[in-house]
Image (cartoon, rainbow, N blue to C red; front, side, top):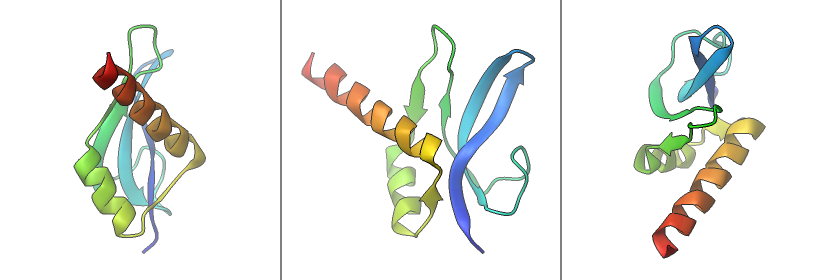
Length: 86
């Protein structure tokens, strides 16, 4: 079983919110997921929330993030570092 870290769309019509999930690479986008790792709200008041301990666990197990998730994780890490220094 090949495991991916990817986005799962939730939310209302024209107001998307995404969950960062671990899922089998062959399952549909909004199908069953193994674990929820965080959320991403692209709206104006939104943000990125990540469970870093579980994300590191799955990356250590060999789960491959999609390009979008990889960029979101980088942005979340950068935002947390800026908040810690401020």
